[in-house]
Image (cartoon, rainbow, N blue to C red; front, side):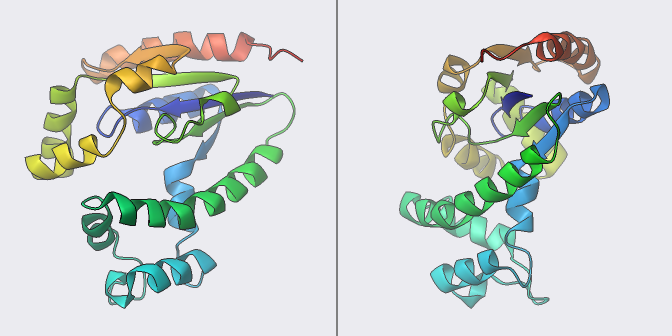
Length: 200
């Protein structure tokens, strides 16, 4: 099994890369998806978040109001740390279960937005960073996700810098250009991942 950490700043296009790698045969373990799973209604994760942040972070249907919670935690590093202390261990446990089920010959790609921030690079055989210029990312967040520019910049400021992410990269995918430039790069990276043999 080859364990790959895939990361990139918000708006860099990590999800597009993840989908392309899945199409090549990678087993994707998506931390964001799992982070939603572990705070779904009825979970211990959601109960812990409500205990920490109050019932106002719940939507009318009893699910987590992610934008409301995001507005609270992204403006306050201590509150963000409290949220991470609840969610990260639950995500870690579920990720380990999915990896164990993948099989010995699999290329398991862990899609981890905060890989650089949380010092997780040593846990993977290889780290792939999806990179794009800050201004490119801001314009994508505004145009494609409908974010206000100041919210986009605040989210980016809460993450590691480009330099910090690139410092942990074994392979870099440049996603500053149009989408059609992405697939050939991902195909090249996949060949390297598929051929990689972890040292025993």
